[in-house]
Image 1 (cartoon, helix red, strand yellow):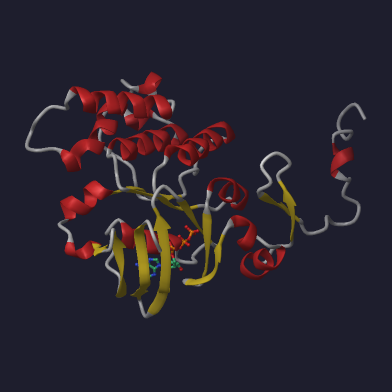
Image 2 (spheres, rainbow, N blue to C red):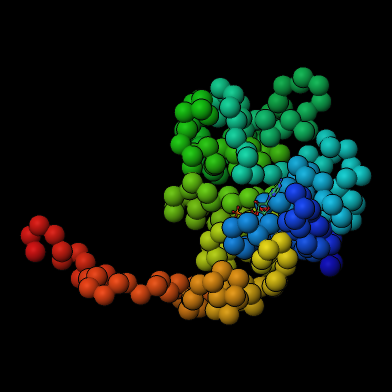
Length: 276
Ligand SMILES: Nc1ncnc2c1ncn2[C@@H]1O[C@H](COP(=O)(O)OP(=O)(O)OP(=O)(O)O)[C@@H](O)[C@H]1O
């Protein structure tokens, strides 16, 4: 694909006698956001691990600007690919600003202190992720959502060619979910992200790839991919697709199983209580 920065080419991962990812091919074009969705255990994190080189594929390759990542020195690929992973955490008693500054490590030469430009980059990333007020706090004292935002800030200061995010909205309250995804959408970054929330994926992703049991089962624009048939087949859930009234992106309304007979209808439920 023209303008492709990252390509997963026929990527397969086998472990413990199982195929976890099966000949997966995905292209991520420059400045585009590609979402990887699928049920628990469908292979999303495993595929992403190959991109940030925590895992070596059994076969196939990950290409960055056409070059097989495994042919690059680890330091060079670490500069180019920043990752926020399920395992991203720090047990060290560092302050928030120290952790954010660690994003410059792949670019550092020897023990040089950060330049003025790098300091400005760190400040900007902390502002964007709304963690400036936490700058001097130990990361060990942060809530899950605060820590997640610090780790995204760290990934941004890396100035990567590609940003790989595994469930970046984990732990985030709705405001910070919306802020993070709005920021990503306007950032011009090239992003490959696993997301569980299909409605957020529809709003933020240019392209969605759906994994099921390690295989790509659908790929295209959110409107092409997020159909009731697909959601039923892959997730086993009935859903109605509506259009977001302002943006027109598809949004899913999930059908819950019918409530047992005798359960009050949700609209009336608030009438129950000590005063009713
Ligand atoms: N090292 C391993 N050895 C054996 N099986 C593994 C290994 N790593 C992952 N798996 C299995 O591979 C499958 C895919 O896991 P993966 O974490 O990639 O799924 P996922 O789509 O990211 O899931 P989730 O949505 O729950 O985060 C799971 O069944 C998991 O148990």
